[in-house]
Image (cartoon, rainbow, N blue to C red; front, side, top):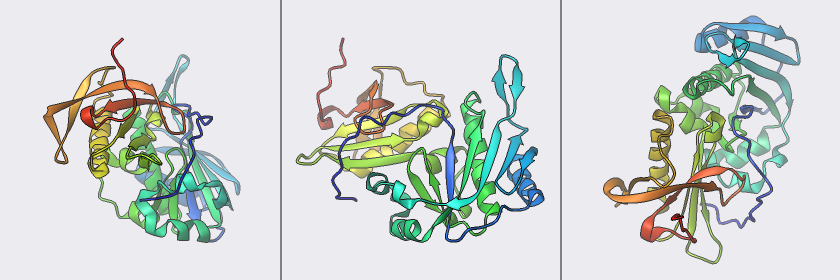
Amino acid sequence: MSKDTFQQDLSKKEQPGLVFVMQLLMKNKCEMPKQEIMTEIMQKHLGKVNCFAYDTNMAIFTAENYKEEFEQGSIPPQLIVTECIKFPADRIDDFTRSQMWDCQEDRDRILSECGYQVIAMNMLAGGMKYQDRADMLMDYLEALVEIYPECEAVYFQTSGKMFTVQAIREHKIPRESRFIYFAVNVRFFTIEGTEEMLVDTLGMSTLFLPDLQYHFHGMDPNWVVNHAYNVLSYIYDNNNPIENDETIDGVVEGNMNQAVQWQCHYEDSLIQPVRGVLDICMNEYASGNRNYEE
């Protein structure tokens, strides 16, 4: 785990549901693939698509099997793929790099060797049903790594996660678990000069669902990370049924246990970017000052 020291920067604020951005990292500049090849692969993964704009700078598709509802009617979301451009790796700061748990051994090599990127994003998808949007985005991801065989890794801008392209192509993650696995980061921090730790998540707000936060001491952080993934899955599977001041099962010897109940409270995050989180108070393991009774 990283031992670097970072400062809080609470000037950074997150806006839920914004454009979802994936950066496909390349060692060398590549040309825009042929329109018919892109369309064929997109349809293989996403069903019916329409490529309504294509040139050497950008390709834009509509995913016809998905719809966003507006007062005037429903329209399909747009999937945008840019030309291959320079990748400014120095814009990914040390704070973000320290939380790239899924490719730690390859992180520095990838960021130093990959000088180019293709940017893929979606538009007109914020009003979709959240599970439909998650499925579409992950199908989009799997199409992209097939369209670009020269891709080395994919960086998820919203959460700061990065995966080697091999990990994406060879994954065996269940369909309903892909978004949390690839696009939601579970981060870990220690508080300098104390025995306090913080585990939080980043990336759920793409779907207008809450991220999590644990401020604690005296418990194995790996147990807390595992708990976080379990709670994220519960929130995703059930459209976040957790209300303010409710309790959820805590952890005993590394496993969730009904005998221990931890209280949940919605508040602003302690670590950047500032966003609404579901803070989970871990009873005798909790750090910080909490007074939820009003």
